[in-house]
Length: 370
Ligand code: NAP
Ligand code: ZN
Image 1: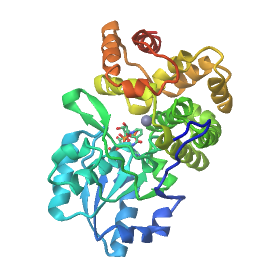
Image 2: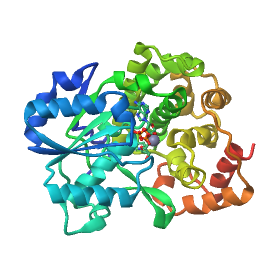
Image 3: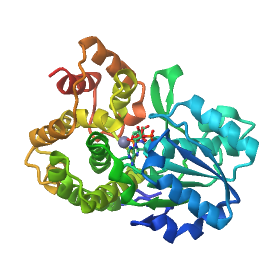
């Protein structure tokens, strides 16, 4: 194609319903997905916040049979996905409903790929050509945006990190009901809100950003800005829950176009090695990431202005205020993370300026050895 100043694709195929009571109001759209579903959840939250019951009531009323797999842990690993897929194949599941944070939603996507390709085993997750069975996503945290992205992040113990599966799996249907977040603790609310914020930031500043993704992010940042006082005060009235869920979904739509960037790629090692929550891992690296851009960078300035922040120090202070980051690190740790991050040149390439090993080390150093 001829090179022009503007050329991009915008693709976001998830049929998305937002609002309190949206599962009951729009359950009919699940009818076309199949006659037998697997409901995929974490161990307890979907039972406590009412999402599991809303889903199974809807399935019962539509005459869709279902089985429950409620063993998804945080940062789901390949072994759990394999176990669920084996059951799904055995009982003839035709579609999957992931309820929870990013972990059950991502796991549902990976399980759907393995169940659609029973002969391939886990290889199905790493070749880009494998088909998937339909997935429905019901987020109960406001952070990952997995309900509107094609990504599924799985932990590979063999590689001591997390990785995106190769097939692109968008949910066929997503139900975003903010009431499920009423049971979320301040800690998980803030960690996941920071995940949503970092999606917006990394998408905006990525070398893959385009006209539409940037406008979407600006809208998301202005909504997120209205949540900042509530996140600091740890007070989350209904309108804030609505806004957080919106900002998260908008962040998802944005990274579905551009992917994430350095804090995500660099943060995976903090999650694997130090068990930092995903959002926190990105958040602690964000100030140093912004400061890696040349001084006076116009896009960084515009992004901070959208959030009502005057400089990168204010971003750092915001992260300090909303995240409880108490982990300690050594120089040996960050040398190891630096080496590991260099193994993902595709993530490094999202940074729109040249980036050296020393730059990566310094970002870790500034963020973790302060
Ligand atoms: P999560 O790992 O899904 O859940 C964290 C914790 O929150 C779990 O203990 C869970 O309990 C609990 N929880 C969930 N909803 C709750 C509610 N409404 N009330 C009370 N507790 C609740 O956390 P997450 O941050 O949402 O997801 C992180 C994962 O998503 C990571 O693996 C990350 O890599 C991935 N991710 C994916 C994308 C994407 O585009 N696909 C983007 C960013 C991140 P239960 O275990 O009992 O449910
Ligand atoms: Zn994320």
